[in-house]
Image (cartoon, rainbow, N blue to C red; front, side, top):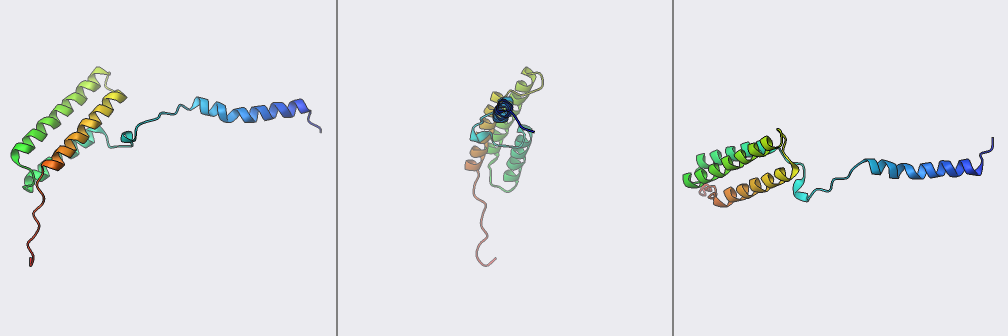
Length: 124
């Protein structure tokens, strides 16, 4: 059975259009590198709270620095709750990015404020 040139051209046109149609239906979201897959904001805040407690217990963070960090941690938690409430229980992408930036700043601040862990003296 012979195929007509018109049928072949039509089949070729459909085959060429299929990848374009698939791409047109799949939106591509270009996110900045800082938006890589990260733990949830709640998880990150909990981890930071644990880190503050651990550094205080180890003597690596002063009580004044820990109090400051906890106040900032509570402020970020309050902001996250307000953002969710404002958006019907969901957080807007821009709000999430801003909170991640605030968490990163607090994490860096805690890292800079802590004192190095004392090293054991030689011979111990």
